[in-house]
Image 1 (spheres, helix red, strand yellow):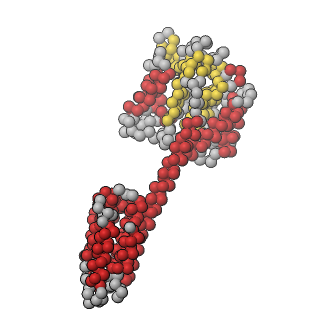
Image 2 (tube, helix red, strand yellow):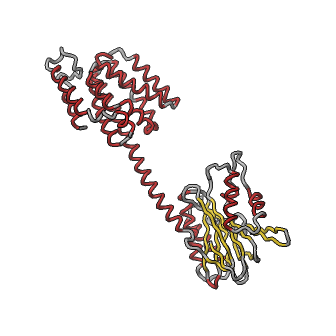
Image 3 (spheres, helix red, strand yellow):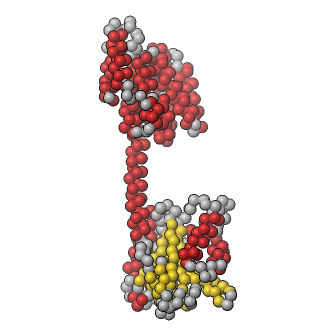
Amino acid sequence: MFINVLLIMEFSLVDPCGVADVSNRDNCVSLPSRATKTIGSVQMVLSNYGAERTDAATSLNAKEMQQAYEIRAVLEEVGGRAAARALKGNTAALRRGLDSMRAAFFRRDLDSFVEHDIAFHRNILLASQNAVLLRVWDSLAVDLRIRALIGKISGDFPELVESHRPIVDALDKGLGREAGLLLRNHVETVLEFLKKSESDSEFHKILRNDLEDAKEVHRAFFPQENLLIPGLTCETFCRPARGIGGDYYDFLPLQADRWGIAVGDVCGKGIGAALLMASLQASLRAQAMHAHSDLATLIADVHRLVLAASPKHLYASLFYAEYDPATRILRYVNAGHSAPIVLRWEFGRCEVFHLEPSGTTLGLLESSQFSSRAFQLEKDDLLVAYTDGITESENASGESWGKERLETLLRGCHDRTPGQIVRRILDEVSGFAENRPQVDDMALVVVCVQDDAARGSR
């Protein structure tokens, strides 16, 4: 259908004298009969194309839209050639329309721009006094297609607006052939913008698919099975701000029945942070699985690996501990991470301990040094490790939820299970932020110490 319309318009509407006005009988005596045949042919070809005018125009089917604009390019070239005679020295209305388009552009008023753009091009067709062109315009639903398309190419407005000026100049001088070519070029430029928009959309589709694959890989970094750690009951939570991110937690079964517990936070968000997080996790696992006597040396080795593998602007905080179920001793290194909290309830009171940093963040300074510490856990102790996405969640006033609110909440969690505690923290943070969008990655690990014989699960 599309090819037929182009052939009919290009070879039937333009007469041998180079004049596209089918009503001008003085220029070519054979034109009236040809015009009559042309009208019938075009109407027949477009009968189905324009039957569902509104639906076709607003469906934004890329192939149909491109075909319609290719037809429109020919239509406007023919119309421009014919209109030049009537518009020579008589383009004041077109210039006012162009000024109105410019004004709408500066106001970023798409609706107003579209109205003036439609009027501009239709007035040229009216000046051609060619009934066939107007019928094809209406059959193609050009006005509706312009409305549907304009939002897709609004980023190219400046070039689109100013491409009207040389058209007006050529028409004002009566240069029909030049005006026609400029009109055709204008429409073809819009078509190229459309193709670029569709290409970008396809790129974004591919990107979204890749991101979904990345999310699957990202989830695989976290422990998948229900871990049974002697003497501990655990609950975890991790939610990136952008689908994937740099916060993470991990549990590592080690030699001599010990368990490694890690909570990390890579600066930044998104794919870059996730890549560094993956590097950090792989480095930590590789070092921790080998026999080692000192956690400070282990973390120093991890630091050197991260420093060598990451850009200078990316770094990570890390809390890494090794728990011995037989003694309940927790040995740890805190490399610049938010201090985990240990709560102990005895004799009706709650004592709070903070496992403060014992070294700088990883991957930042070559001269970083680390020291290890030990903490004696007791039955019913509660250990809470988290990333700053929890405590730095903000309300509408820009106020952070903060460590004090977290600690106050935890003091009231005696006899709560780790799962209940995680849910309560998340509910409090969400309520404080008034359900505003999450802006930072979040990770949370809650561990309760049980009887020696008890076995917990994550």
